[in-house]
Length: 403
Image (cartoon, rainbow, N blue to C red; front, side):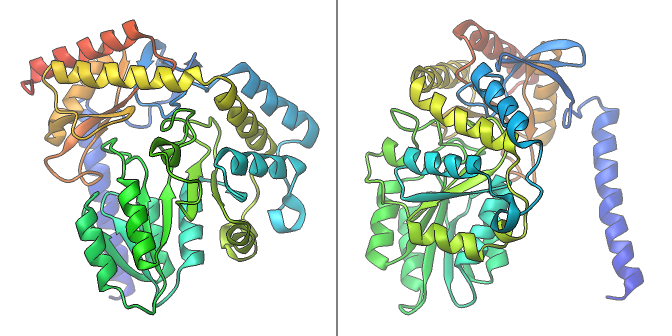
C-alpha cells in the first residue's frame, strides 16, 4: 500500500463515520456525548437545563457526590497539590498511594495491590506484561475491549471460548501444549449483558490444567457478594481462587483508575516490569484520596449493597412484566433488547424526551440484531423513580412495537 492509498483509506473511514453521525443528528437520534451540567445526588443529572433520571451510570452504590469522598479529595489536593510530577518508580509515589493499595489488598483479601491510571490501561499493561510469544491466553468471547487489546498486544497465542461455555473452555485448554504457560481471562460481570461468569467451574478447570486465572471485576466490585467485595465472595470461594484480580476505580469507586490485587510476588513483578507503571504518571492525589475513602464507605455503609440488589431486582422483573427481553442479566446492568439499531435509537429518543436518561448500544459494539438500551440502576434510585423509568420505557416500547 503506497502512501497515497493509505491516506485515502484513512480519509474514507473518517468520512464514513462523519456521515453516520451526521445522519443520526439530522434525524434527531444522536444522544452520545451529551454534556452533563451537574450531578444531582447520583440518581439524577442536569442536562441541557433539564433534570433527568440517570439510568446510564456505573455509580452502582450511588457514591458520586458523597460528602466524605468529596472532602477526602479536597484534603488530598490541599496536602499534595493537583499532580504527582512524576512516575511512581521515580518521584511520583505518595504515602497516599501506598495507603490506597494496602486498603485495596485488604478489601480483596489479597497480599498486595498496585494501581494504574485507568482500567483500560490496567488490562492492557498487565496482560501484555505477564504473557508473551508462545504463551497461550484464552478469553471469553464477550470480554471487554481492553482485555482483547491486551491479549493482542501480548503477542501470545490468542484463543477465545464461547461466552460462559465451560465445555468449550475446557476444549481450548486441552488444545494448549503441555509445556506452555496458559492464562484464562474473563469479566466477572459482562458489561453489555449483565450476566456473571461461572467462576467455580472456571477455577476448577484452571487448577486442572495448570492455567493462571485473571478476572476483571470492573462491574462486580460493590455489586456482588454480601459485603460488595466481589465475585469470590458471591460464590463463597477462597480469596486465592483468582490469581490476578483486576478492577477499576471509575465505577462503584467514583474517581478514575484501575488496580490489580494478588500475591506479593505478582505485584512486585508488575511494579518493576509493567510499562504503564514505569512510564505513566501516578494517580493524582485527588483520585487516590477519593478512592481510599470510597473503599472505607463500602465497608461502613453496607446497606448500599443490599439496596442496589433490591433496585436491580425491581428493574429487571418490572421490565420483564412489561414484555421486554432483558437477556441474561443478573445484576444492575439491564439490557433492554431492541434488536434493530434504529429501534434502539428511537427508544432512546422517546425515553429522553420524558427525562429518562438512557443510551443505545448498537452494532458493532454488539452483534447486529442485538441492539439494545443498556440501562443501569444504582443504590441512589428510589422505588418510585424506578417505577417511573419503567413506565416511560414501557410506553416507548409499545409505541415502537417491540412489546
